[in-house]
Structures are given as C-alpha cells and as structure tokens.
Image (tube, rainbow, N blue to C red):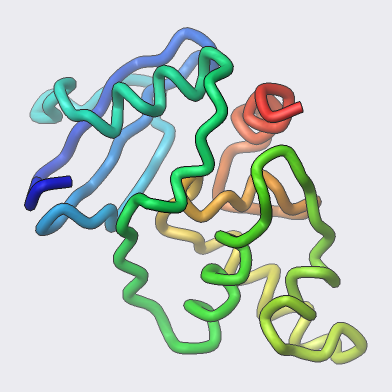
Length: 150
C-alpha cells in the first residue's frame, strides 16, 4: 500500500464494528475488530475502501495484499496455508493441518493449528473465518464474512 505506516480504522455498519488495520511500510501487520475506532486512527486508506466494498458484497480475496507475519516458522506456515483457502469456501482444522504439511492424526499438530488460528494477527487477509474452528476473528464477524462470501 505504497509504504503506508500507521493505524487506520473505519466503522462498518455491515459487521457492527470497526476494522482497525496496523500497517508498516505498506504491509499489514495487524487487524482487529474493536467496537469503535481508536481516537488516533486515520479513516482514510485504500484498504479500508476495499474492505467496505467487500462487506457490501464485492468479491475480493485480498491475496494481493502484503501481510507481514512475524511469527514462528510453523505458525507462519499454517497462516500462509490458511491464506490459500479460496473465497467462498470453508475448511476444517484437519484440512488446514494437511495444507500446512502437518499430520492431522497428531493431536499436537491439530492443537498447533488451532493455536495459530486463534493468534492470527491479520484476520480477513489471512481468512481464518473460512476455517470451521476457533479463530482470531470474533464469531459474529466471522459469521457475517462467511455469509457475504456465499
């Protein structure tokens, strides 16, 4: 996003919350869904415009958005695999385990995937709402996102 750095946030009626983005050098480093925007957040950013269009039903998988995942390698691999789940589809945790190159029969691998999804720093751009499990996206927001993508 052209080297943008800062916190950007906008309230969206469709989800009844704010989408707040943290950017560093044009890469998304955080996404959250607070009740209202932070006082120092800027509401003007092209990504917020895209999110608004997406929330109104315009298909967008956001795969072109640069995301900076500063996580342990195993968790980053899981979130990168999650990012490949196509728009409008859902996956199970077991499928994400397999997509990540892990063993879906190993309880530790399954738990690792669940933990990575719950700690996802960039929901929406790493679409954990497309996984049928506990995720970083609040459940009410995840339900709305899944409904939008149907």
